Image (cartoon, rainbow, N blue to C red):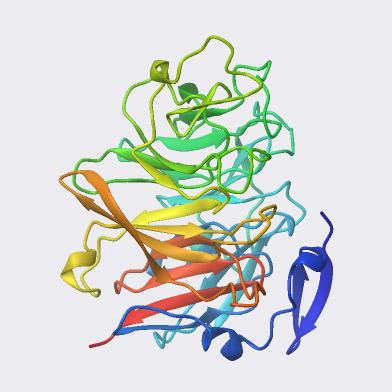
Length: 372
């Protein structure tokens, strides 16, 4: 895959080769988007090329990781009008710094091969400090190497190491795993295995249970295997890769005599190639009550399906601790003519209850608000 530079209204954009349309003006894109009644979407920040993972700092500061851009940004809405009016470059020339997490005044950034930390960052946005290395023993493989990063309810850092391939049985134990460690880099441990690639997870605010998205393997057809939402429960749990997909589909190359019943099945299946990425349980009070504690999932969109799909944010509803339905929440980044206007990556709830959505194709962050 290669990337072209595009200039739109003075903004430097990146397009993933000829398969993607050249986006028009931001307002033209917004006019194509559909949301449930009462919800409104606008541009929160439009100068964050390749915007991917989002983290909330103090006083509403939003930290933004990227992938191919190699930069980390901070954006601020200092006057509270719903539009970011300040942007700071925290770092450049990093190795796919997708994951960002914030705690106790420090910004943690996950590169492919290490986790770094910027101390006292909110007071130094204009003059960021040199980063401190937290952990530097992660593999450097670029394939599925970009990482999500979050703090769990136990105050530990959680991230994942993807499989260094589409489908293979990795030689290194660390590959295709979910891991956690202390904020100082100590007590590193693998807590889940058999996970091809997750770039999004969150904890149910009621049960504190960890759920994570997982992208299924390629080249088994347009509709197999599904993407997944998985629930992690115990250390050492195995979720099937590369032997079994979706809980009931043996891999044609690697299953051998392994049975799908040996592994933890997904709690929810998403159509193949949707590319489910960032996800958040909504905990605010701005949206209607039936959105409370429900799960928003960004579906980045297919790249190798004969007819593309995805390119939307969905709401997965939970009942009694189990997912029961999935419905579009924001759609329209994929037009009826199969033109791609944007690719949502991550979801972040703001202190006022509004929700931000990053778009790494257009290089913007959207804000979803609700008014009756």
